[in-house]
Length: 115
Length: 112
Image (cartoon, rainbow over all chains, first blue to last red; front, side, top):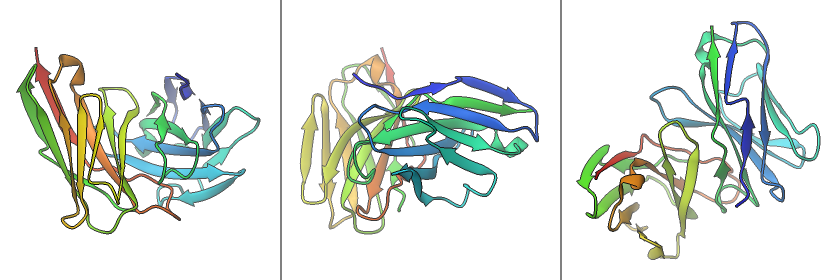
């Protein structure tokens, strides 16, 4: 069964550094999402992306964050200047149509540790 | 978007027993989805029930929806140790909202 893949599985970065998290969504999906889960807390929505632009974003997704689909297969989340509180699991997801009406398929996440 | 609240927060049962988890939400929905998360893994979609449906089955899973009470339940029959995970509901208002909003979930432990 097709799946969403995320790399790396674990990323350790110094505070203030830029980090790029990578995702390969399911190939025929058109809608892409990023979520994060701080240890012991809820899974939180960050952003959705369709047709090469952001469809919706949460309050968490401030100017430090950006997303990009640089080619036909990858979907990336960039954090420009990381803070300690950015430490979390980051999940990428994709769906064949609007996420509210179709299942979202999640990757296994990237654990981001900010030192 | 809106968040579902799962109940109970934790549930421990013996293998072979049935497990029932409940979800309540606040505003009208287009559909409601259930997801599972194994420790350290991503969320796995289990089942989607639309607002005009009352019950839906998938294998050992049965989901009910009562829009008048704004509640849903997930029943796992003949549970297995591999069902040990956290379970989340995600009510979706539908058109115009893309995000899923998750609550704290129900942590299910199935004891072999």
